[in-house]
Length: 119
Image (cartoon, rainbow, N blue to C red; front, side, top):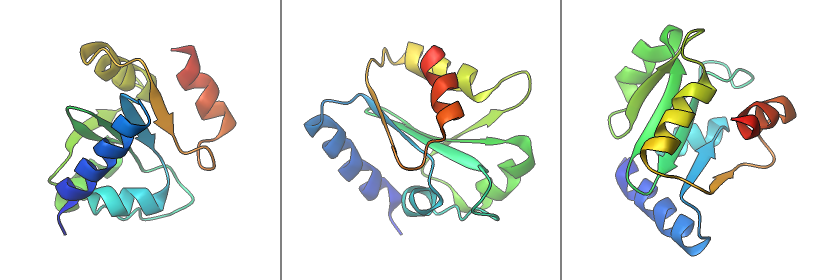
């Protein structure tokens, strides 16, 4: 599977919608854009953050080795207690001067949205 082609098509869509990035959380999109199949679809084992320049898969150290087996087209970013998701995303957003981020409205939990929108 050529995930880079899929990601590039998504980037074209982002340009049409005037978005700088997209934050993907659903298991189906994790599989479609990276090849990583979550072990348990009810858990958040990984996230994908795609910008116009780079593609990131974000997961905890617990799942990092599993992600490395299947994902080659995205940069692995590890989250932890010391480096939470908001810090990782904030660093990417700052580095790439991202202003607008799309997300999956039917998959992002309300408390996740609150945490992310405060940072």
